[in-house]
Structure formats: structure tokens, C-alpha cells
Length: 315
Ligand SMILES: Cc1cc2nc3c(=O)[nH]c(=O)nc-3n(C[C@H](O)[C@H](O)[C@H](O)COP(=O)(O)OP(=O)(O)OC[C@H]3O[C@@H](n4cnc5c(N)ncnc54)[C@H](O)[C@@H]3O)c2cc1C
Ligand code: FES
Image (cartoon, rainbow, N blue to C red; front, side, top):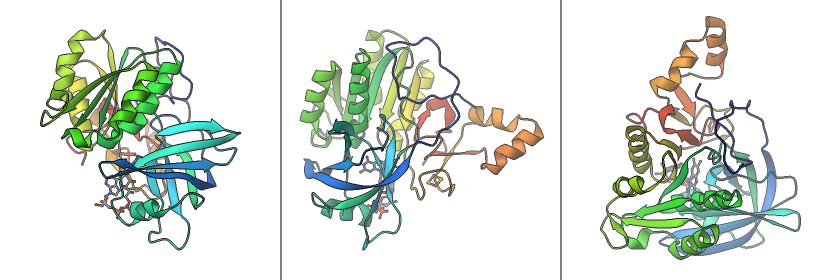
């Protein structure tokens, strides 16, 4: 298996990756209260929840499952990336940037301050922000939110980041003013790109990486969040350019905790090989945990290193 780390504590610089610790269950289910629900522009909403004491603080790249209180139009919880975490009077205040798309997220948008939501989390593996190299954060659309949290975590570890933010048009650079002020405080450098050239670099984020990379100290470590097409392009760029890339993936989910096996993503042959090469007893034990052809987005991810997935088969 390719080794991965949790991104909880961030030493200022490390030279070597530690072996992946055994997955530790840290999530719990709590009843939260809506604190803020507001428009965020470009069709997006900002939601902030107050969580009771005892809920572990999520790290950048992790997500929670939000389950609406009954009566609800949807049976299953909806996965949502954590966009901000603050502590206030012993409680956690957790923010989310979301788009009301279907029945679940539209019902979420109806909630008002004081309403209750059931929250399960923190879930999944976040960005390994302690990896050695120049951190380059690459955001597409609403992917900006968890990466601003990553920029702030890097700043606390006294590391500056390059922040590449792209969208099809300037109107779709979600929450640009907020991104500017948070990055200014975190000491990160913002690079904008739009497909139509209406703001910043004229072209997509990968073309912008082509022009930016030669000016940065190698090795580059990319941390990206955005549509799967963009993430596949960033993964291929990293592989071709000798950089590492950590991509926050999405999948339709049910349990969010590895039980239902319902959020598969195709493993690369490189990531499958060590699992398949195990002695038959170990391979059988691994098979009981699921088919090694597939990684589970919720527990193996949602953040994956580029070489872990088969990008030709990612939808
Ligand atoms: C780890 C993770 C983190 C996420 N973080 C965010 C976030 O920060 N902000 C946000 O707005 N959304 C996020 N999503 C996506 C969000 O969970 C879905 O948009 C939501 O579940 C849709 O629910 P719904 O009931 O509104 O729509 P549904 O009626 O269930 O679906 C509406 C449409 O959205 C599609 N859809 C459902 N789930 C996903 C998905 N995961 N990815 C892409 N398309 C989907 C459906 O196929 C359908 O076309 C995340 C998903 C995952 C897995
Ligand atoms: S959502 Fe159930 S295993 Fe991932």
C-alpha cells in the first residue's frame, strides 16, 4: 500500500514520511445547531454550525456527514467538506461552503439559526500538509474553501503557500474577496486563472502551473480540490513533472465510514500491486475488507495521492 499520513499536527518541515498509522476511529455523532446560514455569491451558501464539546477538530481535507432532522426529504446524510474550524467557549464552530443542488442540499439551505442538524465526523483523511516541498494549493470553484483552511494550517506551521484559484469565468471565482483577505493573513500568494480570461491568467489552472512552476523551489507538493476533471489534469501534470499531488475526491456516499462499500474509486495498478502480491492468507484477509481494485472514497480518502488512483477510470 502507498503510505499516507494524517494531517493533524504539522511540524514546520519534515524530511521523511512516517509509515501510515493504523486507521483510528475518531468520529462521533452529535446534534449541532445552525449558527449562520447566508448567501456566499455565485449560487453558493455558507453554513456555520455550533458543535458540542467532545467533537474532534477536523483538519483540512476531512469531511462530515450532515443528516437533516425529521421530517426530511432525504433518508441518507450528505457529505460536506469542512471549510473552517474555530473554537469558541469550549465548543467548535465549523463552516461549510455548499451549493443547493438537489433535495438534500436545498433542504439544508432552508435551515435557520437555531435549527438542529445531526453531524457525524470528522471523517476521512485530510491533506498531508507536513510533506516536504513548496506547498502549491490548487482550487477549482467551491474547492477553494477547504484549501483556505489548509493555507491557514500551513501558516500556523510558518509555511507560506502558493494558492492557485481557477474557474471558468470571474463570476465563478467563489468568495474571491474572502479568499484574498484570508490568504493575506496567512501570508499565501494568490494566483488567479479563468478559462475566458476575464480575471487573472487566461487559461486553466494546469496551464497556469506550467508558467508558475519554473519560478518555485522544487520539489513541489500540490494539494488540490475541485471538479474531478480538474483533479485528473492536476494529477497527470504532477506525475509528468515529478511533483507529488494530493487530490480531494468526491463520490456519492451512504455511510461515510467504510461500512457500505458504496463509494468506490478505481485504484491504480501501482496501488493495487502490493495488495495483490501479499501471501494468500493476507490477500484473503484484505479481500474481506473489500476488493483491492477499489479504494473507498470515505475512508481511504477523500484525499488521495495522484499515484493511488487510475485517472483514466475516475468519473
Ligand atoms: C467528501 C465529500 C465532500 C463534499 N463536500 C462538498 C462541499 O463542501 N460543498 C458542496 O456543495 N458539496 C460537497 N459535496 C457534494 C455533496 O455531498 C452533494 O452535492 C450532495 O450530496 C448532493 O445532495 P442532494 O440531496 O442535494 O442532491 P441529490 O439529489 O442527491 O443529487 C443532486 C445531483 O448531485 C449529484 N451528486 C450527489 N452527490 C455528489 C457528489 N458527491 N459529487 C458530485 N455530484 C454529486 C447527483 O448525482 C445529482 O446529479 C461533497 C461530497 C463528498 C463525497
Ligand atoms: S460511503 Fe459507505 S463505504 Fe464509503
